Image (cartoon, rainbow over all chains, first blue to last red; front, side, top):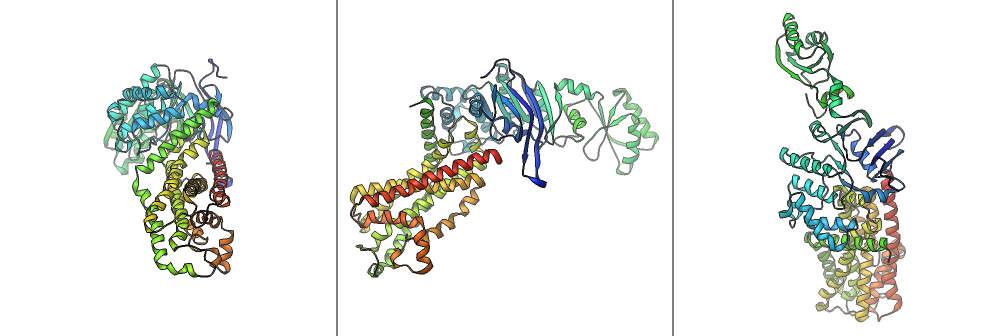
Length: 320
Length: 262
């Protein structure tokens, strides 16, 4: 009963608890989501925020403790098999049997998804070519680099040409080059009409790829919107200042006159400049007047990290 | 056959090839379960050569004929631990999730993973028999008996593999599965695998009497040392086949619970 007008991913009040009694942990705590067709939706949050648990629920690997969700028009609990048929999934850490070759894995995947025997080899070849692994297809996966594994993982997820793709931290741990090539591939898929939900702990990744971003912290979505709009909402640029340890408290008081304090990495003070960049010289003068020497100064335009910090009160991936 | 049944058959086929391939590509996992049982036979045959004269000991030409059944079951049990460990490793690495997230039959995932052990169980039975022939082994029930033993070996591997898989799925830990190895060893020692029940006494005898492994081993043994009987064939095949069905049932149930609870 897939309907064409319905959004491909809808979650309503999704809850998932682990353990019971006093030890109960609410890993997902009332998540509401709607991803529209053809969108790249970025799910942003630190480790343990509930990103992966939400993805595991939406991909039928985990039953929700509460709430409901539909993917590709099918209910994730009562129509789990139909959901599985419609989605492509690349889970965290690219779990790939190191003893098998790339081609063997693709052919196994083809059987699991019911692809006719006479087109399996062709499909495997196409996908290997698409992700640039043609030359490595007959090598055991154990010999692949991290980037190659992720690319193979993506190819496996595409075997049945799914319309909805779930990518759980697709580039975590990859070098910049591999990351870029994977981004390119994800953009290409999206241009072809695939709806993508990706989780990431990299702000840049969300900024680069996602049409919309949801920031999740402690199992709850704390902010949602287009990256540009979210950044504009934060408004003021952030001024980051380092001073000698014994000046920190007095510097904090001075900075408070120029705007709200922003969370930063340890050893740095941050303030959202209400008057914008033109206030920088005033800040420096005010600090100078108090006899506080500035050791380091940096002005930063609003980033998704600021959005994140404003929404959660702490910073992601140790960014300052 | 319906489309679903056809797809399940293909899935079992593909997943079976994978599990057989993984045994072939990791010979170091396989070799110990071929050597240890033979070592036990060699030891037993030289140490207990005259035990066959003890009153109550079955009538055999040599201890070797008596020992074959025990070593076959021992070898197959060890092989099955390997295959359940492989399942636990699949869970640890996340490969299992890849299978679960595909529209694949749950039975296919399980049976496919155990197929390697099944083929291996059959091959082990043949291997032990062939290796011991030059040392004077004789199979009284002939070729049909040997075939029955090979099928019995296959089902024994499935039965133990399925039960151990439930543990693998429940714990998701390859260490836990490997840790159960000594337990199986103990169970085997408290059976008639190495000595006939008739020569046992006291608690030892009582445990061996209720130990299903005793009856399994005795089926194999009867095919080795007696003329072919239907009872022995059924004992060798049906006991492990029945345990297989129960084991697969338990494993599938554990799998369902895992999705809801983990």
